[in-house]
Length: 364
Image 1 (cartoon, one colour):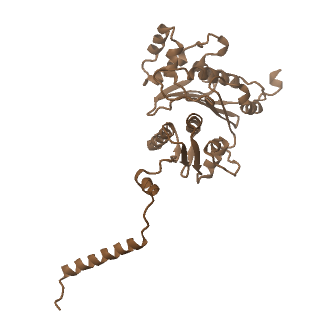
Image 2 (cartoon, rainbow, N blue to C red):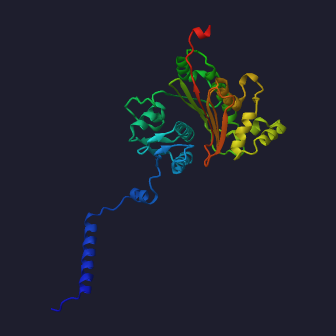
Image 3 (cartoon, helix red, strand yellow):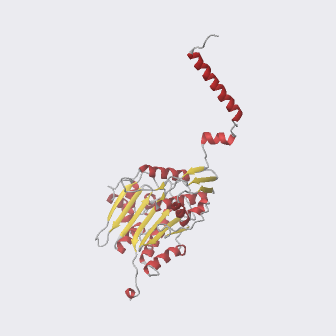
């Protein structure tokens, strides 16, 4: 028998291997169901994976900007979700910065109340993230059952509140007021009064009708608060999903076009329309209600820091970010504005203020 050439031997070997593979596939292969085929082609449309970090903005130069990109990509998926059921995968979430966590809670609440979406979640691996979700009551919106009790020092002091967009009821903030009273010894601290007044003004203007805003806006809840009192320091962050300062300020000053043009002329060098609107709102000194007892809106929120004498205040509205800081014994504070790459589709206000224990003797 004539010996086969090496080339022919390799050819027959490849044919044999191919035949064996086809046989194995015929014996062991199970046909995919229609659901499996759709999932393989289009992915699981009911599941959205949360990013590892919830962060809106950071002044740190070494921060990877992709974390911010991934966060807003995630938030945008929440905003535009159209199906009736949603599962959020929290498996890899390790960090939730307070303002980003509050914005997520607001958007999730809007999705549930307006679109009537049933939300479930895959729990995170991180114990810290589990504690944050439970302490901020986001776990209830996600349908998660977290058995462990928060015990981390950077988690257990946070308090939450929310209410309808029409008004701010001080009774809903009782737990927050109790923390301030416990820290200062005062039943009605000026810090509390100033922040409540600022919230009332901002919420009043946040949900006015505007032709440029087509998205459905929440009703109840329409504002959300995270607060922490720790080491004689108060942190408060307030969120609404309204039209933003850039759109609300012209409506507030609709009958005073001259004043509006003057305000925007004063802040014309700021970068971005939202930042110019924030700075103009700081300059504006009257409430549109005409009621002097209602305070001075955004400017009053800013003045809380000046009245205390030190602290931090920030305001984020759509793509604008304003930050103000005043140190102790400093005659005048310093501020800066940053134009964000993404819009938060609403407004965030935040304060960090010192709280001092007031003794009975000091009140005499």
